[in-house]
Length: 248
Ligand SMILES: Nc1ncnc2c1ncn2[C@@H]1O[C@H](COP(=O)(O)OP(=O)(O)OP(=O)(O)O)[C@@H](O)[C@H]1O
Image 1 (cartoon, rainbow, N blue to C red):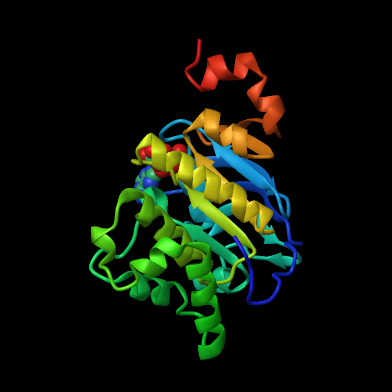
Image 2: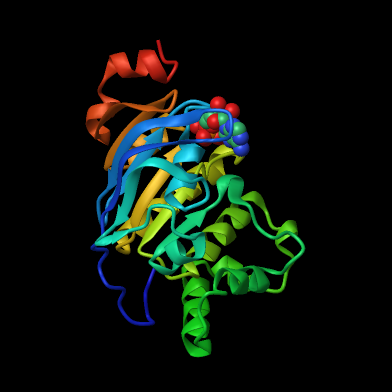
């Protein structure tokens, strides 16, 4: 990937989730969860179905109110801020299962991603950069997103997130529902985005490939952090695999 539209400032802000407890009407789902995503690194959150991964993302993005604890990004406390204000501070999300707006063209999907940017020239430059990064999207810019292949939809949903010009990208299970070939493609893109200087929070169920690409990781089970460390340390922990990843 190249950046011909001027260099991106190196990621410098750390995301810190401190002692967060949150949930839904009936009960708390996350209990005293603390995680950090360090600038310029890939941090993964692993956990089985229902472990609380999506709820953690929702609480970071201001979608599910934090009941106790706090969330900070660099020097800013972002606990329970409106989602658009959190986005404006430089946090983007790529939704689960490479979701796109199927009845809109590739170009229109990207424009929606850039809605927060009011400066026409900056928006056009950003769009151009997306097309450099993902030439296939440029070829298909007038095609309806719903007619793209799985891999192209993943690219589009990632590119749409990048249209907000973030420093931190939160990926919610990007490999979900993709065939193995496209899964590898998504992980390749995640690695490249790190090389470009983005900070990445990667929420996944795909343990092996995620630990392979990530620098640091956390394991969530029943709404609690049950393990934390470098990905290498987590990958080497046989007991952890037996207890939480279903590998015997
Ligand atoms: N909107 C909601 N209202 C009530 N309970 C919810 C809601 N969303 C999730 N939950 C519950 O919260 C718990 C954690 O769910 P969450 O979706 O955060 O887990 P997850 O790790 O992301 O799982 P998955 O991988 O299946 O998405 C589950 O018990 C789930 O039933």
